[in-house]
Image (cartoon, rainbow, N blue to C red; front, side, top):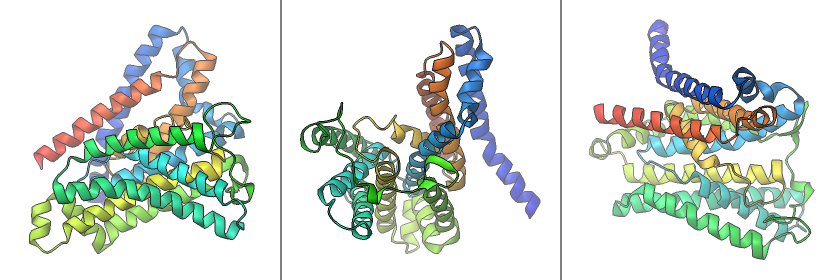
Length: 343
């Protein structure tokens, strides 16, 4: 039994590991064409995050939203929904938490903190609920609706951060600071690292339990695998799909809240280096498995932060990571589509 499980795990890991190695190999060839010291460039890309506690803190802060968005994508994908709305859900959670924190700054922390958390999660969940309902009730393509919602939210938050809640004493499209009484504490022993990473890890474990160790999770996966069969055996598949999209959006909203309360302490219009796309990549690379998503989010956080150190020490631009991300998305999406076609 154990040997069979290990064999299945090895098979499951083959595709993502092969995709990572192929992508890194192609990236190394590009780096060789740009700089005279490709080894140093790749060393900084992958390992500079561990050179100091400050670098390590930034690395953990980057991994937190990636993990949460990837977990949200996993819930929607397991329900058979190709959710690409992580970026909009992230921004919705961040702007809502900021508006609540700034507007009701006079409230005590025991009231304001859960209010900001609940508001941000609700905003993200609402953005997940819309495409879920449209998909189930009217068969509207979820890719179109989630992409359109991303654009709407980004434009709306841009308006708010420039015209309504902008901090006139600061440069750029940034809001006023939320009260420090609702800031999340730093991770013990790692100054500057948000304790939100602990939340992300715990939610990754909880997601695995819900999806693979509960009846609700089994019904959700059945609905995503074969909707007609699920309905035929009495599973309320439509309801499961909508709830999954609510959860997915809530995870994205929570990622935005944790950024505001634990990292930026204000809303910044350009705070996300495409977390939505990268979180989607993490989920695909993990083959839609929550524990694997935690690992791939850590890997991507390492690369995103490492690209900045690489650009400083060599002539390689940090946009190389964007290219590698796109290539991994292409490889893993093609792999997932092929697997679905075969099944």
